Amino acid sequence: MTIDVATGIARILKQEGVDWVSTFPVCRVNNALGREGMPMLMLRDDRYAVAVADAFSRITAGTRIGVCTFQGGVNAAGLQYAYAGLAQAYEDGSPVLCITDGVPAGSSGNSQFDVASSMKTVSKWFGYLDKPERVPEFMRRAFTMLRSGRPGPVILAIPNATATYDETADPYRPVKGWKSAPDPADIRAAVALLLQARNPLIYAGEGVIYAGASGELKALAELANMPVITTLKAKGAFPENHPLFVGVRGDQVEHFLNKSDAILAVGSSLSPGRFSHRIPDAAKKTIIHCNVDELHINKIYPTAQAVIGDARMTLQALRQEVSDRTSGAGRPAGTMAAEVKAARDKGFAKYRELMASGEKPINPYRVYGDLMKVLDLHNSFVTHESGNTRDQLSTVFDTLIPRGFLGWGNVSTLGFSLAAAIAAKKAFPDRATVAVTGEAGLGYMLGNLEVLLREKLGVTVAHISNGGFAGYGPGFWGPGHDPFTHSVLGPDEVDMSKVVGALGFHSERVREPTEIIPALRRALAANASGRPAYIEFVCCQYPVYGQWVGRSSE
Ligand SMILES: Cc1ncc(C[n+]2csc(CCOP(=O)(O)OP(=O)(O)O)c2C)c(N)n1
Ligand SMILES: [Mg+2]
Image (tube, rainbow, N blue to C red; front, side, top):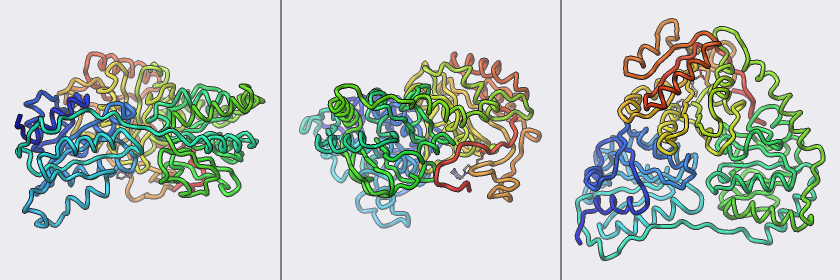
């Protein structure tokens, strides 16, 4: 049967189990998506269309692929705006499928902005559909790349959505996605090094989450009695109430990173970015680097032993090898759990106090502490914004299930939290879902608040309202790094709860610490009936949080 390209794409997406697509109009495949009955979640800008699909892939660990469409072609306004979302997805390695209009044959080279070359810089693959018959081939290739190997965005440009082809000539079969097991010789060598080490440390990255390997990580850590730290993006890969869990950042993480003589990195690039640690004294440590591809091996630090392959199979094999070499006994438990507890207690002492603080304006840690009390940490989703909320939540927020918390940002683009919360609600409708933001993040999300009302998405936006941009380091103000560009209208000048309330949100403004828990409960109750909520917590400026090792605060 002869069908048009856009219809073919819509049908293949359905075959691939895609059950909704995020978009900002216009994109020439959208009408076919509509006609084929594919639900479209319409955001209010193109960057959000990408970010919601991106976050959906992250939150579901790539088991459900987020798909988005936006305007491209000769009038690539949407694509130019979407670029920010694409760059973020690429930087963070998210397997999102992006469909846009391609520049039609005969029109290339007419515009100043070159669509193809810009898209190539932010994608695992940029496919330009130069012939309608290639729809099944391109979709096969796209889903193969989305489901195999190192995750990253795939962008398809469709120059002529109404061109036709014969659907029966190359019938589409859904793509499974493939994994590879590590070389057994590498596993043996890695375990030999691990068992020689006096103070090995597991450094777990997001690859563990994408591989669905949290259980295997726990099993290896327990048998080998190794303490565990996770990266920001992997926060939640290891249960944070486990006796071997050290943290994401903070003094206790620094203690274990300094002390370690061997690092077992799994599913992390180990690249020291703005939001990750440097390995201190790396030349003196034995670095065992397990990754899905070779890109990161010997990248920053010399790798003593590489193990290339799927993180789950790698962790299973490492555990088996540790077990075989120790007759099932593993490494002796020693006092490891007590040492971790002591380091955590010391590292957390000041934050625990702050989480109980009755000061006014409210200390932001009090909000985080109360949030942990109100939420069922086994059935909720929390994410941060760029700025102090990321730094503070990633220091103290207890994450008990994978993706109970979404940490994001090799570079962290303001405004992503609401997109992440929308995606989380789509992925896990029964989970209480909270985006914690400052005023800059709120500014980026304002236009998209309508989406929550229209789609009846019960999400709570918790605004840590401190009247300025704290950002990184000691804050923009006072001795901070950007004292001339931090101040915005704060709670004394604007009542944001009225602004957002007028849209139709359940909204509140909270100045009393004792009101935090009741207000959160009311917000979550409103969410349960599909009504979004906004709470403005009037907070003090408090740029204090755990540091990244090896990075001066700036
Ligand atoms: C798109 C984008 N531009 C600039 C930045 C740099 N930046 C990081 S945090 C921040 C200000 C954050 O202020 P606010 O939202 O009030 O949060 P606070 O730190 O005060 O909690 C800025 C400008 C960014 N992360 N993203
Ligand atoms: Mg602020």
